[in-house]
Amino acid sequence: MIREIRIPFLVLSSFILLTACSTSSMVQNANSVDEPISTEVVTHSQQPDRSERSDLSDLFWAHRDSVKMLFTDADVEFMSGMIGHHAQALIMSSMATENEASPAVTTLTKRIINAQKDEINIMQRWLADRGQTVPQVTIDGLQLIITAGTEPLLQFDPEQVAHAVHHFNEHGTYMDNAHYMEMHGSGAMSHDMHEGMEHGEEEEHSDEGMSHDMHESMEHGEEEKHGNEAMSHDMHEGMGSMDHMGMHDHSSMPGMLTQAQLEELARAKGSEFDRLFLTYMIQHHTGAIIMVKDLVETDGAAQEGQIGKLAGEINVDQTTEIERMRVMLMELMGLGD
Image 1 (tube, rainbow, N blue to C red):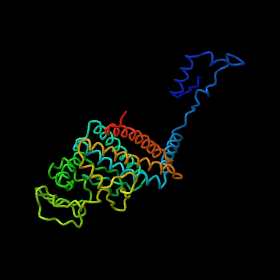
Image 2 (image 1 turned 60 degrees about the horizontal axis):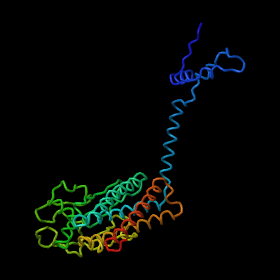
Image 3 (image 1 turned 90 degrees about the vertical axis):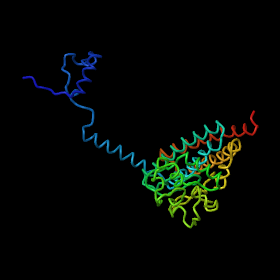
Image 4 (image 1 turned 30 degrees about the horizontal axis):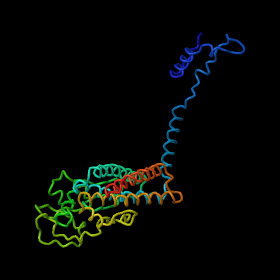
């Protein structure tokens, strides 16, 4: 009686392929070419069984999770700080169109906005994935508001910033998000952009929608046209880097502009804006490079793969942009070759 031999399909396919390629290599034997070929080689699978594959999969993911946890306090500090640092660059860059920047500077600002928005998201996600406090960013005109959260959040509308700059130049006061929403409808900026803010019933040309938390101790005078025009410039001084809920004090980081410098940039037009923007963005980028240098010189920091890669990219990209902006600034000042 012939014994039935069951051969796995994958092994059988490999067997047939080997047969087609070289029959002689399969039957060659030092003792006898007629000696039967052992079926043990054919029936024995070298692949791990299902339970072994499951164990290997678990080991792989466990290893990835353990690698993800190889970070230091310095890494967290760097990511948290760089989020606010990048966010100020978004404010600066959003002024270009309103302030009649040259085509070359306008193109540069668009590139900065695209790159730094993406990197903010990466840094916020990095912190969230590791169970760290996530600096959530709300850009309210010329104001940078940082609050503590658990998930990535960037509330930023370049058009709202440009409108705030226009309002600031006309009235000397800030156009806040609540008033912007009133003028342009809910489609401009969502309620979620004001997490923690209590909006009252909005009335035409009023600032009643501004929450007490955002304007504590501010005295509302008689409501005039344009809503918050009655608020003085002094009421907002220093609000450019608000420190909420114990978050990182972004105003003290290398390269950060003061609120007075942001306002100076907001007032500049044409070639004067180009000059100030390039000067201040070189300062700003140089600060980011200093932050990267401080990180990599800290023992044990920047060893985790993603943060090391990001820090390296920030260093290279911003060094390259600094050189480009220096050339643009020299040409603007008539010092080019």
